[in-house]
Structures are given as structure tokens and as C-alpha cells.
Amino acid sequence: MLQAHNLLQLCRPSVNCNSSEWRGRYVQRDEFECLGARRHMFKDMGLSFLSGHSAWAVYTMLYLVLYLEKRMVWRGTRVLRHTMQFGALMLSWFTALSRVSDYKHHWSDVLAGYFLGFTVAVLVVV
Image (cartoon, rainbow, N blue to C red):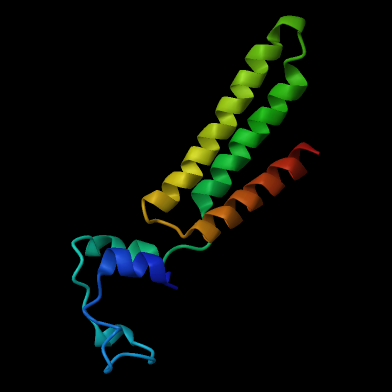
């Protein structure tokens, strides 16, 4: 399903919803034409739920974070361990945000994928 925000930004439909002809009615896909310059991205918008990239990114990075927590127990590695853990989580968060900013997914789909990856990583470690 296309998200309205992405549809209006990328497609720039030829319909003026403020005119009396279109006001208050559902507009079918065959009743308008995309005038936007990025029409090639239109197909990607419909392939949204659930973000596999976000799920995979958070799964791998959270698993790495939890692995480092258990394995790096030497005295002098505390700052290094926390820095590496923070960097890994920020990489997964950057991946999730890039999926939204590149118009590949809606924010709710990225959040659902992120939650799925987070849950699976915790279950695997436990």
C-alpha cells in the first residue's frame, strides 16, 4: 500500500484535490498521472512492509553488542567495549533511518523491522 506522504512527494499527482471535482472522493490509480521527476521510485514505495534491511541491521549489531558484553571482560577494555557497542548500534540506526530517507520504506515499517530484529537478537542470545 502506498503511503500518502510518499505518494504526494514522489509522484506529484495530476489531481488538484482542492477543486470541487475531486473534493471528498476517493481517487483511483487510473484517474491520475504522476508528474514528478522521480517516477522510477514509485514502485519501491509499494514494497514496504516490513523492512528487512532494518531487521537484519539491528539483529546483527545487537548480537555483536551482546557478544562483546559477554566476551570482553578484561579490565582495560571497558571504554573500548562501550565505544564499539555504541558504534555498532549507531550503524544499525543509520541503516534504519536511511531506508526512510531514501523512500524505500515508511517509518512505521522500519520501526516494525527494527523491533523484529531486536527481539530475535535478544531471543537468540538468551
